[in-house]
Length: 231
Ligand SMILES: *Cc1c(COP(=O)(O)O)cnc(C)c1O
Image (cartoon, rainbow, N blue to C red; front, side, top):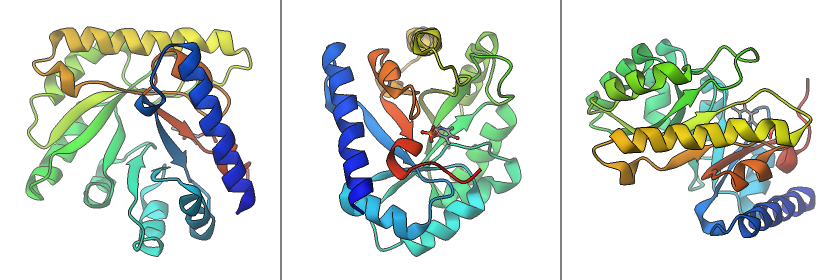
């Protein structure tokens, strides 16, 4: 319990300092606590320490935890690879889906959300690194994906997300984050309602400070809060 509280304090201090360095308001950065593999009891300790927003990668695992933690007022973000056959469950329980990277997935979200009378906030996941992960739309394809998804009533595109390759050298990862910021600006220039298109989800435990300096509005932090995950 004390460990999570101390970790959270440290992460919040680092976010605040990165904001001060870059002239940003610390309130403009939301901490998404990535709780994959973390047991509900530990998540509960994190919530007691001040966590409010959780990120999960696997739908079934997340649904079980949501049931165990149903008495808490939490916001859940889906941050993993979403298969279309899991969309139905994800839509019903998650508040945001951060990993929309293809029209087919967006169509399924649109269909399921519309049938529940919902408009699902989503981020488009962009692949900036290339090799490391297969998920994400290529930057050249992003405008086309955005144009198609932004016409769907059951989906609201609120911004972009990226998962760059793990790089020891933090300055080598910076161009990924500034690149995502530029892509968001490019989309805002063509958006009918740019005020709704503002989110940049980028930065993890080892690089979130650089991401904040480059404009992250959501950082997704797991290890630095909950400790190392089992392999
Ligand atoms: C696991 C995961 C994170 C958190 O990684 P840490 O290094 O533990 O902070 C963030 N984003 C995504 C998409 C993840 O899968």
